[in-house]
Image 1 (cartoon, rainbow, N blue to C red):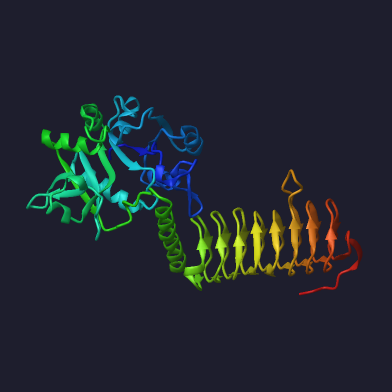
Image 2 (image 1 turned 60 degrees about the vertical axis):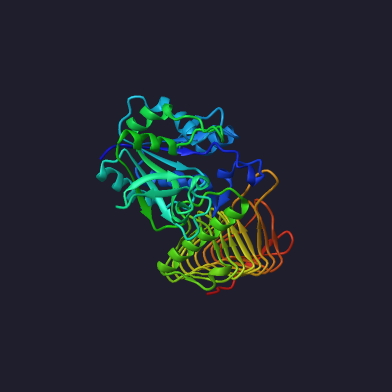
Length: 421
């Protein structure tokens, strides 16, 4: 198997986004768009990945640190020019080069794996990933001969009336032989109308030289979905969210109403957990088996729930870890909390975790009982089996010892708690 390197094109301005943030750094289902493309490169075994940057280069450099090398395209003069910017990194390099666009977060790693297999088995110098669309308007068409063999990529504006009827389109994903690509990229001429250098012209050069070029068709109609507008970002968000929800339901999670449930990428939920409507679960959240979440619950990053946890309506959790069997049924907030097994969080109870400078930890012990409208001003600790009386305020640095009751403002310890099961 030839070694693989990847070039991700992310230098464009994204003018139609009307944003100070590069479009590839806008978030989709919990993480930047560009991260999904980097994930694909890693998943298919790319030994080294290069992200070509231009507009807002410093922001992009920071976003890819540790995951890819950054190549600066001084002037944005088209896709071939962007690839040519990487030429210095490919001197003497043999193997395959995968080229993808940074604004295509719906690319499926399985599809890219199949593309690579097809490319390597066929001995192609270039293999183009194509897709079949019901409405191919605006996309470059794949032109084939009578035997079905690849002939050319025809830009939409250059299509004849018959060619415009073709539904197979260029997705903008390519696999090249590295030596052939960088041996030809400098021969691409500037397009007289657009004043840019097109990567598709490299394929035309290969064809005129008689070297082997082919196209691999995917049935995934979203593979080509690049994000040029906020509306397309919203569409990609919906598609991605639907995929996340389907995968969770297939794994044994009940989603009562997928239409009103928002679960970001990189969330794990255990079997037989139920997610009720109008719940928002952010990236990185971990939920155990047999839990009940929502309705109208928000679980923010860093939250981890054990088995059999109940999180009810109008509740919010942030960077909190709840052990098995914790109950938090309504109108409560836990931030930076560590909650022991079997604890009960009453209605309206909150942790005041931010002191204006730092986020502080609240510790709540096993089978502790936090009464309605209690405020725990972190850092604070409530021991195993302890009770914080309704409406009490436990001030910073104070604690309610195990098995004791704290009441009042500020809370004071008054007696031993009754055992509650």
